[in-house]
Length: 272
Image (tube, rainbow, N blue to C red; front, side, top):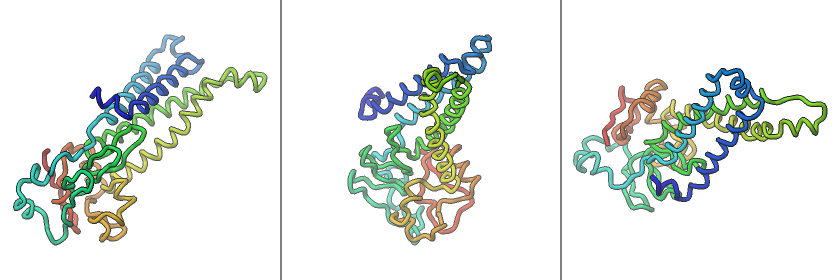
């Protein structure tokens, strides 16, 4: 883990951490609702906000340092048994042949893609996120969405706290001097609120239809999707089932077994 922290993403992670705590410090030191609650001895709101910020930072590092689902070996034999067993499990008429990655030379499971930044194939690849300096894939995608939700709550709360500390003065010059740090915090928190809201909404939509960012944007180039109709998704089992499988089933999915034109009543999964 120490080696992961000090690789190329160290500066991004350090910038995120420093920016988070600088803004938090500004909100606590200026005459905001947090400061007024402290002065009155009402510590519930300051403590809850502090814990929410700590949780967002912990989730950020968890998602950033977590294995997103790297493919480290030829998984067809390692997970699903022999080639004969594989042929029995997969409907050959409707399932494209598994391809071998041209970069790492490993056989890619269905829905995996090679990330040239991470130098690995990633199971159920969604995208490579430069802010966390890690891929978002099968193992950390659900935690990425949880992180976005917690981060959005912290940002919205910070936005209201910063607005509560804006004070009025006689002249514009004095107003900028009195509220300069809070205005700087608002300039950071406001745009991040919009960005995180859009990201969270997009990912929840994709999860609800059991698709990924890569599949949604590049389906015309993906072998197992390019022959499907525009609105057809062979992995979609309905909103409730998709959400349940995504958030509650913490196992590696055998997507080769469920790839077919007609949806099945349940999604078959296997343990890694």
